[in-house]
Image 1 (cartoon, rainbow, N blue to C red):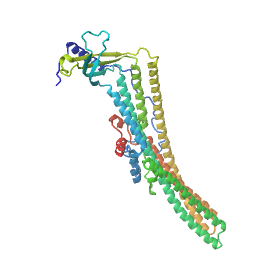
Image 2 (image 1 turned 45 degrees about the vertical axis):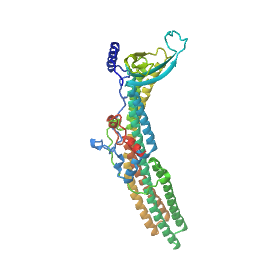
Image 3 (image 1 turned 180 degrees about the horizontal axis):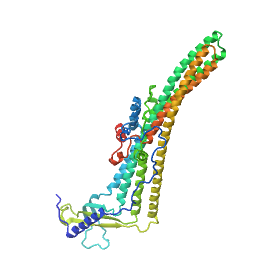
Image 4 (image 1 turned 135 degrees about the horizontal axis):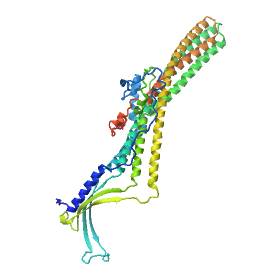
Length: 499
């Protein structure tokens, strides 16, 4: 059993100094500049809104699946697999875990370090050791049990700024993870819509091939009756072969999109198949929102801002190096040349006191590190402004696409109606012998081209809608960082579950 003994009065006095120093720590200074997010030019409204309305409080996209606004069951099944199985998400998650661990390492310096040591040894000292006493033995035992406590007072805020920088970096990595997840989800949605568009084109071409085959049979029948020429038959054969070639090309392009979807959801392309689907997804009319809200809804903007905050704190770390490091140490234990008694009052030893370390000359190293930290702050500030500008451009680009593609769709519908009427009339007049088959071929080509253009236009509008959703941040918000700085994004729990 270890006996407890009161410390001498000198030790108690020095412990008071420790308490005073700890009190001083609470009011310690910091050399980091007062942080302000970089000022960025924010427009008062989006100029390309067209028929879009400003968002109302209830108009937010669902955070648990923005893709649900398209009412596509297959897309609803595919999208959650991105967060669970995509290796790029797993890599971003690992980077976030790494940033968290570095923050924890920085925080550990805010607490005292406690160490325990024990040593049992037998020594022999030299007979000619300088200043050796005449009564000292040649061989002796040295048994030591020691407990030491060390604490960095952090008077200049170096450790606290390291913690701030680490926390900001961790938050930036969390926003990076959300940004990557949003990007891959948007890529999956556009890839899926492109595949659906090709499925619709494939069905159109199948119907067209059947119609062209019927027209060829009609032409061959008229040729056998001496009504049509060989030229008419050749033109009908050419139309049929061209349509069949287009169908093969659509099949080839569809295979590439299918392979891309497999990779996005973490499945080997050789093991993934998706059935042909001619479903036309719902095209939502999304509210554009206020430009100022974009700064809170885009994870890449949040990540850029957090990196500015981290660089700002690093300036405080660099400046603190010009001032001495002050730490307090308390060490105590027992030392004896025998095991019994060992843990007794006569064998007690202790030491207490501050340690001051100051660099006098370093060849300009500390000044260079301050300049580096300031340059990093300027760099990250410029990156933040560039990210904001790019965000506004992406919103305007997709609003413009949706606005003008909507107008184009109305004109395309009118053109399609006219092309189909022209084809019907030309076939009727050809049967009556009023026009040659060249008029039919021209009408067929125009009708097919217009129908394909209409389908491609639908796909472009869907993709522009996905682009707008991505540009306004999906259902993400900076509240996901502010609510709990240590909370992990949804993708993190999904990825861990999958692994």
